[in-house]
Length: 104
Image (cartoon, rainbow, N blue to C red):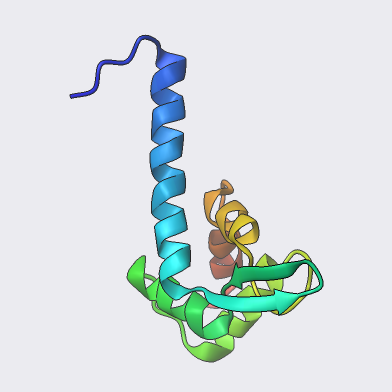
């Protein structure tokens, strides 16, 4: 068990653990992209579908494409790590907002 000097430090530790998990998940499905700012890692629709599946969310490609539109803040057709992280960490998440719009 870790010995934390303060609650603030514990929250920082947990935030770092969450960031590490998300980064590992992102990296697992990311592709290299060469753009005007150099090489970067991004997730396309297939990678997003695979990452969601790993999180236990099953979605067909048509719905993944719709979700990508909501998550892709710079509208470049893929997600960088910050877009991916922001989308997963929002409360409620963009995924939950999107799912709530589906007819039952």
